[in-house]
Image 1 (cartoon, one colour):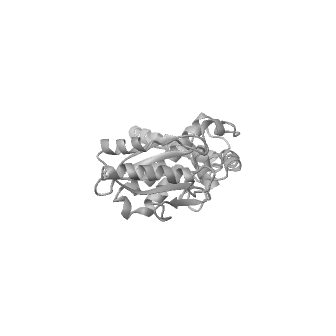
Image 2 (cartoon, helix red, strand yellow):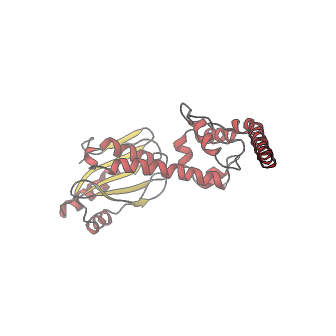
Image 3 (cartoon, one colour):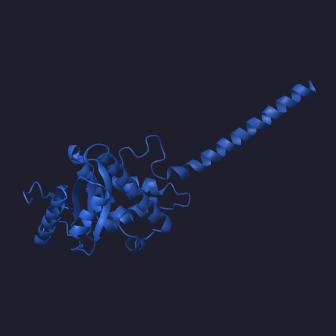
Length: 246
């Protein structure tokens, strides 16, 4: 009987511990429920501001994620602009610390990687919409001009993407000979040129047209084709080929 009675007491103690743990968890639930998106189906149906709050709330030390998300959207206007903002701009926003800045950079990097993976999964010329999506994710919110070259193999699959010019809000110096030299080093058969206009207007300038023609002419000497030159702006994406510029 002593043995049975001991087992009953031990079982009773275990049950008491389980009940205490459940009560403790229930007492903590209101605090947890104040954190957005913790229920099943997390993130489904949320707008961008609420979705960003969900991401920020995952930090153990997170406080007022909705408020921080609201400040970010008030300052920058969109999720893309928030992800593209540099540290100096982000630091001016109330509630943004080094951890928030790091998470936002990871968010942007993840978006770029996903879009790039889709664009590079098959020949670029047969997945043009995926390419356009990628270059917009990468460049549409950049505050300064970036000029990139996408080097393709003979099957028109992406070999390498490289930054070949970086400049001010309205100019990025590009050297056609360097673009072609790099294509030869990579044994690329084709090139797609891409750059952004921070002003928002994607229409090519006279300097854009002149520089592009120089790249096309230099590449032709080595039997390298320039498929297109894309200019990304908030107002859209311009294609030199569609515009009949080469």
